[in-house]
Length: 139
Length: 96
Image 1 (cartoon, chains in turn yellow, orange):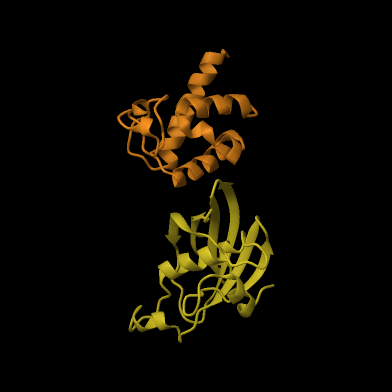
Image 2: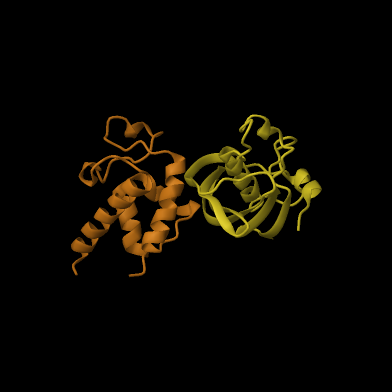
């Protein structure tokens, strides 16, 4: 639905911090699915861990946050949100090179300049992580 | 059921919801129902408020919606001034 190049035009992050490769499903203000292909070539595996490549949980959180940002962006404009809170995050299974992560976000609530989204991260239809992220938007 | 009982019941539920949703380590009885919940207002100083922040408000919006099926919008954000106002809003708007 949105490829890597189109994502780059909308997202504020740049290389090497764009952590989603494709938006596969998007209903504005309702739900979003983004995918991320995890490759052995990623620089994080130099240190996490030198003999045991595991995709870092914090990058999974960032991937969720980037996917969720697409629920709110206005066409033709860059995204504006930043993370305000991260809740109830669990990492249920290790993610390793070769995995494709599907970040699935469901909009929960918006009030004032804040919005909250619930997420799962799935690899081969199994949930590897889940949590909730609150966004703050510049006025 | 009398109006008073219903109000007491919802007050207890709202206090419980605030504590659970925000992971506070306090007893429900220690929440003063007319004390300002949030930081930022000058009246909040020295009045036994909980010192909540704007992210907590969002969490409470989600919690109140789940528990009482009430929709809180930007227009009625003033209900977060204190517990009494939240309870009054729930009494006026919930569907049970």
